[in-house]
Length: 96
Image (cartoon, rainbow, N blue to C red; front, side, top):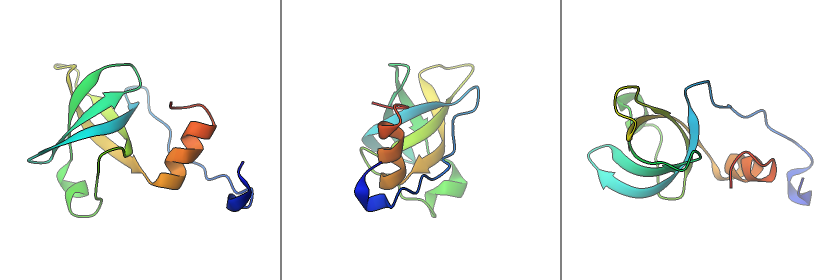
């Protein structure tokens, strides 16, 4: 733990069975982004309607995505981590 967080560790949302960590690499417009998933796959991810107005997603954000069963190159974004949460995930070795 770094000195500036006072030793507080947040309990972060972890991926369910069908979810993977991903990093946003490109904004495509029309509620779509390009993501590089922890499993090494590049996917086009959809920002669901309930997130569009409330949560701003930018390049280099760490997100949780759920790949589509019927099209593995596509996914839905389920969660976005803020910078402190993403740093904590990196420190704990969940993401690179």
